[in-house]
Length: 91
Figure 1 (cartoon, one colour):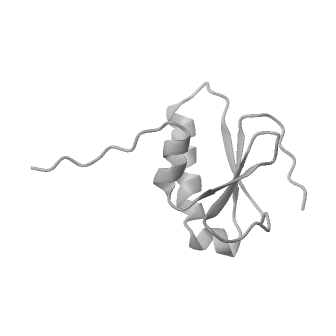
Figure 2 (figure 1 turned 45 degrees about the vertical axis):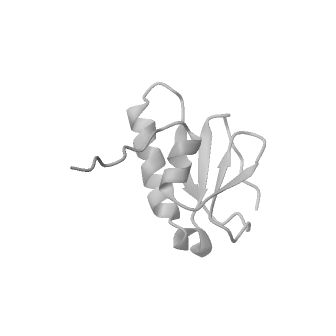
């Protein structure tokens, strides 16, 4: 299936069953949250049908080069985009 990316700041998250098992829904929500926090950056996040790149994590496509990046947890995706996840302080 061909996925058309309209601009270089579009982030496509696979919504296939295998990727959902790796947390694709949560990754999508976290990236959408990042998008709203970083207003004006031009990023858009969309869930799309299966990329047929199953295994090893949730598949995410970024930009016009159609490269698939695998994330095994939402924190990996946020770290990739430079969003630091706060670490809980110990009392």
